[in-house]
Image (tube, rainbow, N blue to C red; front, side):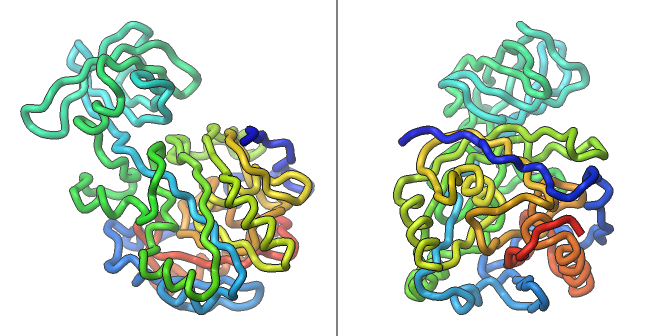
Length: 366
């Protein structure tokens, strides 16, 4: 398959800059979900149409689809990508893998009291008492990221010393249950450092019911990078730059999506990561198969070409994900949906409840 690259502009059509403060909202802290509901498909679902909001549950999804529609899911698999250790001086170090560069090299976000220089040695402790200590050398720096060279194969280091990279707003330490629940049931390709969380609600039984309804399931792979944790720091959003993330559009997925669109059937995406992969790979109205990297920053005014509906969780204030859903459904509509969800005590963020968004006919910033 040929590689693909972004050629379309993601700049908003509305005049004047979009501001970070336009996407702030107040959330009662007790609505931040600390644990997922059981079973997965018992999570609440807010249906956000063009004119109405409807309260439902995720297991209702099959009734909301018609035969011939395509549902696209991101099959990336979350790595145990958080590592803890110390410098030779004894100072604490926390590492979050951004991406592997080879069997023993990686780009990482690194938290420590002082940024280490090239050549500095780090030592990572195993997750179990008595396990091996893994040595690491700082090879250099690239902006916010550091390149590290591991003494041992990275795969073995993550298995021995890695933790599930739960988001910082989840306050408990990763437990064995999180290794299973912070992973979709269809996760296949290792490479993500955060889960595509909308997919956490789906079960094998629910996916089978969707297929029995005549919905075609299709898969993309987008490896969610550490940049997903990075806040938007600039007020003028034209100054924000997204970290690039790797994706793949299989030939079967491109064929399914293009066929559905040609026959007038809807294409729905599970999660913002699926949206970014699909929209990045559209050329002249058709989805192109292939590999690529995307740093696509979707803001209100973006011209969507592929996705008609979006299953997604509730997102952090002033986050790039909130900006994406505001582009998709309309900023005013998202504000109404979030106000409803807060009043109705929905659960927010990675382990929280979900929304099913209809794409706004006109996606201007409002």
